[in-house]
Length: 87
Image 1 (tube, rainbow, N blue to C red):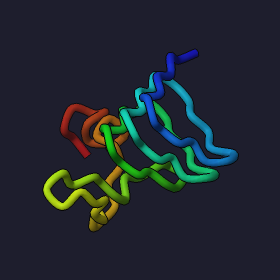
Image 2 (cartoon, helix red, strand yellow):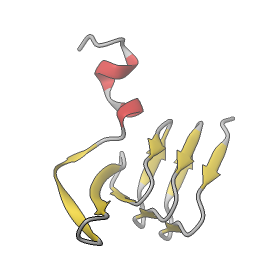
Image 3 (cartoon, rainbow, N blue to C red):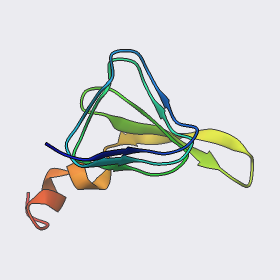
């Protein structure tokens, strides 16, 4: 069983599932019904979906959450990262 760390000010949506060794950063939003597995979610991000993908990041310059296009999976979930750079 993994260790889950949830940062201050983070919101976890209804029926979200968090599995494995996961650190969810400060002031994040995990959308309802999202599935976060074996990944670190950076501070000030919004993640949604199954598997969870980063869809917005906080931009200090504009003091707003800006869309991420295309949505990104947290780095530790990407297949090439798990396989040492091989697809």
